[in-house]
Image (cartoon, rainbow, N blue to C red; front, top):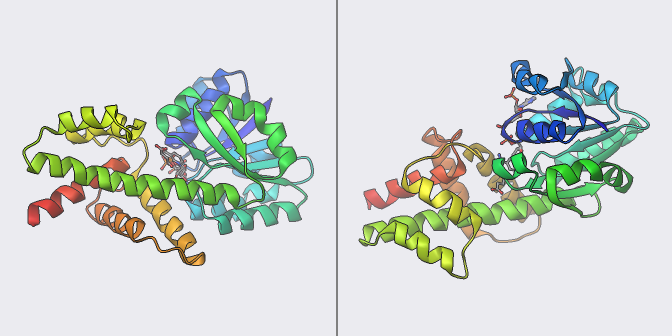
Length: 291
Ligand SMILES: NC(=O)C1=CN([C@@H]2O[C@H](COP(=O)(O)OP(=O)(O)OC[C@H]3O[C@@H](n4cnc5c(N)ncnc54)[C@H](OP(=O)(O)O)[C@@H]3O)[C@@H](O)[C@H]2O)C=CC1
Ligand SMILES: O=CCCC(=O)O
């Protein structure tokens, strides 16, 4: 099976590499073209533009930073829309809002093409090991066609119905994750400032009912001030912002998420946006120091 792949950031690089290792022919494109070199060394071809990739491949996958990037790659000159049409499918795995997905879907349908949104739960390591959870919605026939690729990329694909449902599900999940990360950060500081060993806290947490891979994976690194990015903080703040907008639209009051969003914004203003989202811990440390 031949697939196109647009966007070779943390996620796209790992996912396209995984497809190559599992026997897929892959043609890649990235805005910064030099990031294609490593994939080429593993057998990928390169398209000079998104349009060139779509022209060559019947299915093209994208995973890009945010709504602006997702829209630009489709609608700008030499973008996806230039070459999409009958018999061609486009799968956007970026985390965006439902409105962005619907706009892309409508434009592709007008050209006779097929569209699926398929954001993912899971980060850099699950992307490297094919353990993502895929939250697809949109064209069911394209979903069926893409299952062999989804089986390589993830541990379970979900088909959630009409376009927008994948984006909504992903935003709800990341809203919860961002809120929990803030509570976790406060807990680590509270333990430390009340003269408990925070490593003991991590051990106790891991044996109880709220044990989870995030505490287990990120906790020890946070205590070492290591925020090497798996999920960049700027993207987590984008997801909080988009989830809060979804809350606005549905009149859902989310004071916990709103407070967490403020902490991520603060972290961005401190220049921490490109670090892992666990770097929000630094804002909590500051607050507790100043009080
Ligand atoms: N990292 C993670 O753990 C996870 C991330 N996600 C989501 O996946 C998406 C990608 O995340 P991740 O790989 O971490 O992000 P990165 O920041 O590592 O990569 C972003 C990618 O988007 C491209 N890009 C940004 N702006 C534009 C633009 N205007 N036009 C074209 N391309 C653009 C970048 O190109 P360039 O190299 O030229 O800058 C790069 O390929 C995001 O929506 C994120 O929320 C979802 C699950 C987990
Ligand atoms: O959107 C990013 C999700 C990161 C994760 O699931 O750890």
